[in-house]
Figure 1 (cartoon, rainbow, N blue to C red):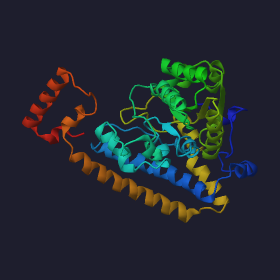
Figure 2: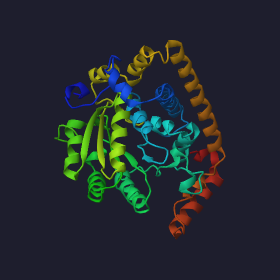
Figure 3: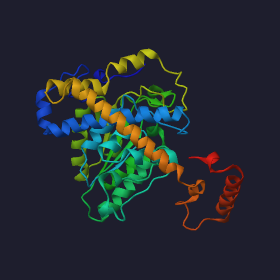
Figure 4: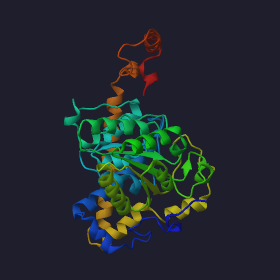
Length: 370
């Protein structure tokens, strides 16, 4: 059975599942109306992009797609709490976080079409906020020690920057989790570890992954604090991350567990027949977008007509971005898969390249689309 935030006395929350809220806590956030509406726009855009990507995968345009339905608040809130100079290394399903940081939709989709990423900036100083990240790495958990290492380097250079790195509950079972947190704690690095507890590591439920009551409890073993937050409350995730970032900037790492639920499948390759519908329905009633809409309407910031127009615009942007990304992918040669890997490719890589080019000559580039 799934766990719910209301089962924990120490789980932080501002917005209840029904949209009611703590007015004093909202005021203390010191967020402008524009910022509050902006987070909503990012959440809606993330859901629209997720739906478009899944549709394209079903149509054979994408080989693979990661689902994020129901996780939007746990992605957008933390991203909104960072300054432009901070770093954010996301999981690959965190579309909302990337959107909140300003990453173009086309750029997000091209990663899934090509399998690699590009940076427009020639130096760190010239980077846009969304470019302050490391490349997505398929190996689960490796981003944790890598982010700790990155921020150690930035600290040694005297930079006033914080690195926020995300990992799922499954990734917390990897040795890299221990390595990353231990390294950050020992060297007092400016890192916030965002543990996205969506309660399933593909088909393994959280109770089979750990005997701990919460993942946040693990932080004490590394010499710093941990916090448990309602992951479907975008304001609570923002507040907790903001506080954690301030602590990290002062040399105190933080483990932030956001308790949420992956309502969709793990990925487009997942049969998803291992879960109980009762859990999915219970979490659908706790939908992060629904509760935030109730809040925004109560505050007079947006209304039903606004919600509809924002959704329609988000769907159109997702459609246009997908069309553009597919057009760009069509112009690329299959042999580009070998680029940007080795500075001096070994002989066996050159042999593989020649073998691929021979196959392209025989079957045409259309047979080797990204």
